[in-house]
Image 1 (tube, rainbow, N blue to C red):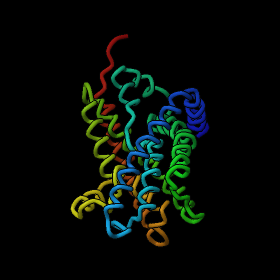
Image 2 (cartoon, rainbow, N blue to C red; image 1 turned 60 degrees about the vertical axis):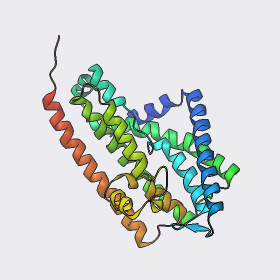
Image 3 (spheres, one colour; image 1 turned 135 degrees about the vertical axis):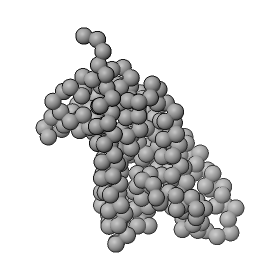
Image 4 (tube, rainbow, N blue to C red; image 1 turned 180 degrees about the vertical axis):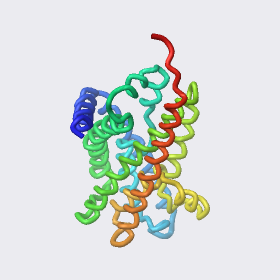
Length: 264
């Protein structure tokens, strides 16, 4: 465990060197957060009722800034770092080392994303609080939100890793990553709360793991999921963590059998 802890710490430290990238990322997040908020403000002003699908305008604004902040843990896009090592052949070195291949990448992922969450995510949300009045959670909601974010981090990694492993069979898995990103963004509730979807699409989203990465943590933050429902939500996230990590293990085992090492 010490090895994986050290990998996570070094990953955390390494990502701190990209200061300009983080500033630009926060500005970009804030721009799109403001754009989405203005759309919600315009829509709610056209509504006779102050509540739409269980969301007030304050809920929608808070949800918007929260989901923009959760980009920092991979709620809106998938990194292709693992796929790049597969294409370059560097994956052979990683697979030959006396460590868990999945564990090493998970440690690296957690180191980067925890820093992203603490800096990029927190500062992005602070802009939403200062400029648009995004709400802060209650102490009770914050505890549940913390647990949900931890599970969302594991889910985000498991989904990213699963998509990246397709590079073992595809010369270029860019198309797979593109489709995976669209599915993640749409069905996780990143663009819109899932409650705004038609009933048929809500049913589809409920059967997929993506809501557990974005929508469930955001609804817990808003206080819409409490008590027994909170326990059920965390249990659902945990179940998807087990399923996706199980699929990763199976897929990696199949992938290793396909590897052919050429050269000296």
